[in-house]
Length: 489
Image 1 (spheres, rainbow, N blue to C red):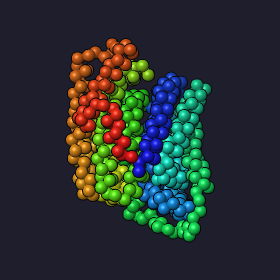
Image 2: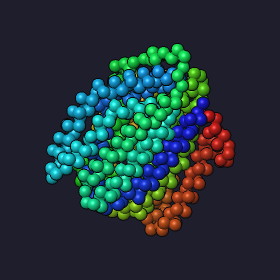
Image 3: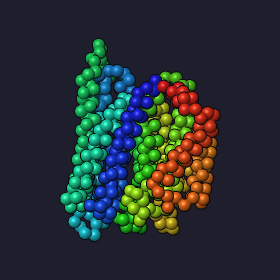
Image 4: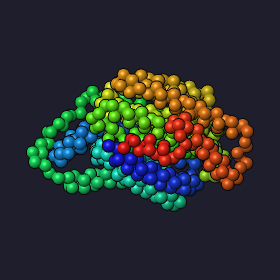
């Protein structure tokens, strides 16, 4: 049942590790040659561009179940019809995209004291015009082919990074970063389209292949609930940087990005669990097996997140020091809250896919929207009183004190009990937190050599593995843990 999910996750992780390792090499060079101020501005523009996802009016999220159903009907004409249906929906919102492009360019120019970067803003907004092509990556995600999307994203990101270095060395500044971004986004839009064409060309024609076979249109209600979910998710992801930009310099935005780099790596590793498995989960007819799958994957998820978070958290300070310099490190408290946020977000993201798979998005749209607004409000107050640590503190408050407990009740309402998963998560991360602060209190890691740091991290990883495996699986033998994971297949 879940073999393709395992394959998708494996290739997603390979792509993630490749792009992450590349960014560790390229980011310091870009900061060096383009300047910390331009790099901070570039990151800020990316956060604003993220809100363009709301301009599709929820089509992308709402279309996933329709494209997924068309794929499993194994009808070539039905798949083509589903793609045309979604493509037409995308084309209808293009005027909204154009308005967003213009307004964003005008806004960024008005905030720019130099008024010399308008062309860069226009170039970075241009890839929004590729929105209709998103239907092809949507289809690949819905047809258990996430690994292809991962490959295209990897090609795009690597192209962006290396071109950005070249243009930064040539002295193009923010304009060079904008051109690099445009190239990468173009590749990410075109490659899934080519793969989809190839897939459809190899799909056999069936007798009585009726393109209307089981195909349903995207309803306004689906779009509304999907739009709410998309907007709220974007608020949680990018509001921190935007809020901080009103209180801090572009250099501080660079520090804000740098200090979250390892945590974002962990986040991507965790979020890919739901991305890779949801399409298989969505079409299994046995509800009991779907519940069994969720229970097992919760345990695997918590084990994975608990085992990697503590070593990465302890590594963060040393990593930043070696990567870009001690002067760009914020604090251990900042790092701790950031890692907690991304671990929580990964778990909540996994549960969010359950509602999509069950066709129950309406159940959580109000909850997600409220969580998004609480996140923004607490982040603004936090930034005002606590400066750079405020935005991530506000996010933690909205995630933990509202979203986690609200979504638990919603899952129980549709037949999924996650009480044990929450208890396991809190137990694992309470232990991790205690170990983290104990090590900081007893050991001065700032004076450690790279070799000693590696030995410490390896030791902590081993201890974390032993504790988590005993608590969750009642064994520390890797082969037995693997058998538990294998049951997911």
